[in-house]
Structures are given as structure tokens and as C-alpha cells.
Amino acid sequence: MISKKKEMVLKGIPASPGIVSGKAFLYGREQYTISRRNITDAQVQNEIKRFKEALLQTKNEILEIKKRISDELGAEHGQIFSAHLLVIDDAMLIEEVISKLKKEKLGIEYIFQDVLRRYIKVFSEMDDEYLKERISDINDVGRRILRNLIGAKEDLLSNLKEKVVVVAYDLSPSDTATMHKKNVKGFATDIGGRTSHTAIMAKSLEIPAVVGLEVLTKKVESGDMIIVDGTHGIVVVNPSPKTLRKYELERERLISFEKHLMELKNLPCVTLDGRKIELASNIEVPEDVPSVLAHGAEGIGLYRTEYFYMNRKDLPTEEEQFKAYSSVAKKLKPYPVTIRTLDIGGDKFLSQLEVPQQMNPFLGWRAIRFCLARPDIFKAQLRAILRASAHGKLRLMYPMISGLTELQQANALLEEAKKELKKENLPFDENIEVGAMIEVPSAALTADILAKEVDFFSIGTNDLIQYSLAVDRVNEKIAYLYEPAHPAVLRLIKNIIENGHKADIWVGMCGEMAGDTIMTVILLGLGLDEFSTSPIAVPEIKRIIRAVTMTQAKVIAEEALTLSTGKEVEIFARKKLKEILPDMVDEAE
Ligand code: PEP
Ligand code: MG
Image (cartoon, rainbow, N blue to C red; front, side, top):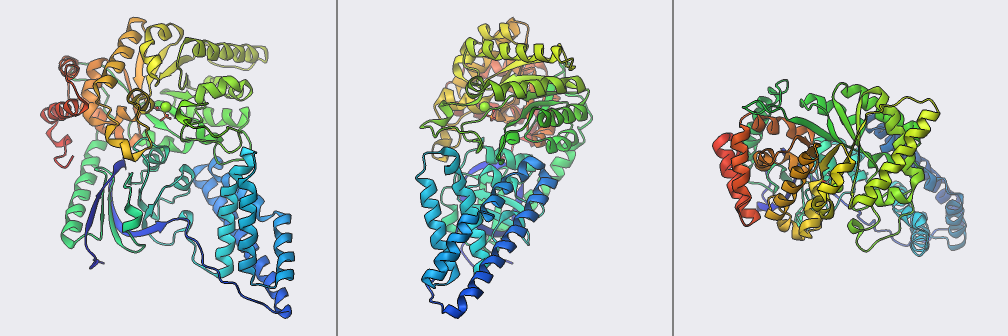
């Protein structure tokens, strides 16, 4: 169906590649309009009956979603709905609604909404962070109950009845997790950056997405035709027939290009002059493993473990973690799996841990800082990783290391965990490689010192760029300043690799830059030993690596280092890539 409305093109940030078109579905916290309606004594019982039916209907809905999400994405993603069930069963809330209804004799929707608002107000005024975080659960469930009371249509992403393109102001990582690939063709949001975790999740689900569109939700109505071009970061609202055709052709071109890339799957990742490069993938949950293997990655360079701890009320036990880590290790064997220890904070927070709100969460109590302060949580994870190392080739790395002391403290806890396991006669790989993520400028500048304590480095460019350029990675307003090609970033990377090699350790990269095709040759020339990217980027990176010699790459990297701005480096890198593989560089970019 072609709309008569005027075509509008919006430029955002490419978050997950691919092109889709379809009906827009505006997802938001829309408010239901509920009028005040008097009821008679005789109607009271009927209103109570309606309320109880709505509660039951809501409970069944939630149970169904919980089951589906647990089946499809794993139990850890299903956990969020357990918290929702607790709200429905809250006897105090139910009693308060019924007694108020009897007293005030107003329509049940009105009474329920009133009680709900008061609950939310009371919770938001509490000092307890855990209880404060329950507000979003109460809100979600409350809206569901209200919707069932007034018979409005379901607007949840997990339960879409037709294929749509989701448009939202923002989506939390758990919103993204509940998306059904079957019905969500793609999504576009007003806020968010390329390396926000919602964007990363979209990539792992292989859903095309554009973020940081700023005003999109003000320009689109549900039902409008919309194109999401996640490869170039473009959204077209109400496209003309000509634009639709253009994107349809581009979509077909991309699909056949991808098919061609997949033919590389079983070929080795080696440069023209024979240098073998380790090409691995990043995963969020064990369910991502099939995609890693399908795209031809030879290992996992970053297994983010935060998702284990998200959307649940309790902490994952050592046993539970051991099972997940060892199942991934077994599936990847003989390839390596690099498990990163818990990196909470920044834009990833955990509801079950009482982390106080911080003015600058990315600069705050995060990752290794949190783990060193909570050795109980950290040790359980270290023990689980060590135990799983008996079942495959595991590596372990710490996030957010900012200096030597932190690294030594983490290693000391690891030694303790090893000793405990030995005492308990539990097997583990005594030679497990231990690495540090280099993602803080202070670590990059002291790479020579840190290299003595570890077996490898993995460069976390998502954070390294935000910290070295002072550009919040999730703020779309300053996204233009978030430049992987910035000379400061290149110099830091050069320093990390050189000092790693001087100390005889290998250096990898697991930030999004490792999957940025424009930068591949430069990174290769700087001496990077391992690239770890989202699975979908693997074939393209392999194709580039297989098309150059190390000599060629070194010359290109050296010249890139003489340039003065990120833009200059980017233009230069694009030109060089075009010379090597003309069809890799898109004129539209
Ligand atoms: C990084 O910072 O580059 C990284 C890989 O870690 P995360 O994106 O999880 O912070
Ligand atoms: Mg990081």
C-alpha cells in the first residue's frame, strides 16, 4: 500500500544492518483515557468480577509470554516476567482497589488507575533502590490490567499479530529481547548510539535497526509505511513508489552480496602473504552460538555475561553459570571462547543488585570496580568459568581495567578461586589464558606495565573511544564526535598493540570497531592479531583480510597515522578499501 502522505527522509545512526520496509508500529507508553463513572450499589459486585477477570487474563498473558521468551531466548530473559507476576498477586493492592471501589462507587478502571498512581508515587519516594526499580514492573503490569479492563488492544512487542517496523522513543535491552523476529521486521528509535546495548542486541538478533533519529516518533503514525535502512542509518517515512522500488532493489543487492560473502565461510582467515588472523565473534547469550558458527567465525572473542544477571530478581548461581559457560565451550570446541567477567554499570544495570544511581554511570561504579567490591559475586563467576574450562578452550578477561593494582587484585582473586577448586578436586584448565580488556585510556597508556600480568589484551573500542574523546557512547546529540578513526584513537591502539607484542602477548579487539570494514586494513597494518565482531560482520571482515598483504596493510596504517583528523583518516581508509575491493565501498556512505 502506497501512502498519499509526503515522503520524509531522516538520518540516524546505523545500529544493525539490513533493509526492511513495512507498516510502522508506534510503541510507547501511551496513556489510556479513563473517565470517572458513577456506579450503583447493585453494580459493585459486577465491577469486582470484571477486576478479577482482568487480573486472571493478565496473569495468563504474562505466563504465556514468559514461557515463550524462556524457550526462545533462554531462561534468563524470561525472568523479567517473574517480577511481573509478583505484582499481579499482590494481595494489598487488590484489597485496596476493592475496598476503595465499595467506598467510592466509581468505575473499576478509574479506581484501579487511582490506586496504581498512588502506589507508583509511594515507590518513587522510597530510598530503597531495589524497590524504586519495581516501578517499571508495576507500571507494565498496571497498564496490562487497565488495558484488559477497558478492552483496548495489546501493544506489546512480544505479542504482535502482524509483521511491523517498530518505532519508539527508546527501547530497553529487555524490550529488544522480547521482540519476535517473526513479527518485528526492524526498528527505529529517537535516542541511542551505535554501541548502546540495544543496538548490540539488535545485531545479535539480526534485526535491522536505526537509532538516534531524534524526532522520528513525532513524525510517524502507527500504520504509516516506513523503510528502515540499518546499513546506512536512514529511515524513510511514507516513501514514494519510486523510493520503495529503489530500496527494494538495494535490499536484493545486499542479500545477494551477503550470499556471496557466506561462500567464504569455510575459507581460512589469512592475508594474501600468509598471516593467519583469528576471526571471532561477540555473543550476549548462549543462544547466539549457532549464528557464530553459521557465519564462519573461529571462536568467541567476547562473551558478555551481563545478560545472565539481567531481568531477574536473584543472582545466577555458580552452578547455573557453569552449565551455560561449559555448554558454549563444548559447542565451540576446539575454537576458543573468551568469557568476560561481569561488566555492569554504564547503560547496563541490574535490578537485583543495589547499585545507587550515579551522576556519571560510565565513569562510576562499574565492571571490575564493582566485582572487586563484591568478591562474593565475582568469585562465584570466576569459579564457574574455571570449572567450565575443563570442557573446552576457555579464556577469561576482565573489563574496565584502569591500572595495575586492579589487575593484580583481580588476578589474586582468580588464584584464590583456583586454589579452592584444587582443594575441592574440581577440574579446570591450569593454563587458561587470562586477559585484560583495554578500554580505558589509562590502561592504553600503561599497556607496557599491564602486559606483564596477562596473556592477552582485547581492545574495547566502544568504551575506549567514549573515554578518550569524552563522547558519551549512547548520546545521539554528540554522535558525530564519536569517531573510531580519530588520530587519538589510532595512536592509543598502536601503543596497545606495540606494547603487547613487546611483552610477547597477543592483542585482539572486541569493540564494534573490529567489525567496521572501513578500518579493517588499518587495524591489520597496526598488527592486530584477533578481530571479534558481531556474527553478521564476520564474512565481510574475512573477505578484506583475505584480499591484502601485511606489507600493503602496514603501509596503509603508517600513512593513516600521519593524518590529522578522523574525517581525513576515514576518507583515506575508504579510498584504500575501494582500491582493494571496489564493491565493498558503497557510494551512499
Ligand atoms: C567495548 O567497550 O568495546 C566492549 C566491547 O565492551 P562493552 O560494549 O560491553 O562495554
Ligand atoms: Mg566496554
